[in-house]
Image (cartoon, rainbow, N blue to C red; front, side):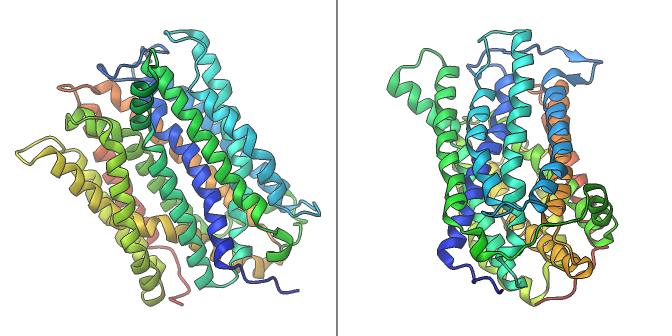
Length: 447
């Protein structure tokens, strides 16, 4: 049986799932450290201890790292469950539906501490709800991504669907980046007593919107109509061994790992770059994200065209090199005579170019790796491949958040900002490393 080709309307519906998931995870990335480790003058209270552990770690770094590691370990189990599922409604969609409401609830709870003052109870609460959120969101995103190779059977269709997916992800970032603007609007309009209360209301509204987005593909796409994947009979250990013995996949993963550490650093640090290094209002963040989204979209057709003409590999390598320049520039923000607004907008525009390809191509490349593996092994292990990828993505994001939080020990305020600047140097090294590693990747050639 040949599945029906996924129409454009269904491709759009698929992108909404990524948009909703992106809103939630980027609320965590953009706000979490800023909320629990606020710079002076932010108007937010200290909710957990700011004391360092062993002189290099702080509590928020330990919490985020621990939560992400537990989540990452969970990935292959939900992937194997999805791959081997014989549910008559499909291997992926039922899991996605079940994960939506828990993701909404626990994402909100992350930003609703038990007390509004520094407390050990807040630490315990954050550990619990953060782990629960990560597990819930993983239960959605692993099956969601595993649909891509089945919904897009050709190389060209994989790039197109990955493009829609990327559009959803970027829009999700843009929505999440408006959190502080909406917070200020709500505080002015409804007279919230504290900025924290207004921020919590903002998060709740965004989580509800994100859950609605996540529900769209889960109810709009008929998995049995558009997919022909069969339940995998390969045990978890054997599936992981087969996956990790794929050398091309390993080169992909190592480069991907370096990239996500770097991106997490810039996501976690954006508010600090704006408010501390450039001494601009933190509400500028959403305008920067909108600029990045719009400029990035201008290059989406270029990425689709060039991926056919020169191949995906060369585009990825060049993008890593351009992004390394962006990170190096972070170290120099606020220095010299150039206008602060001009500095940050130039940086955002430059970052938009490589992000256009790095938002689209990795999932398309991974889908092709999976397609070849399915032909070679006669086993559908889409979930396992995406689980292994997301295992390393989450470890990378953990390192990124933890490293950035640790760097803040060396300066996070105006006039004492060395820690923030050093994060740019680290991002530069990581992106350069990713470019070098990806030169070892073997591509079958442009299609």
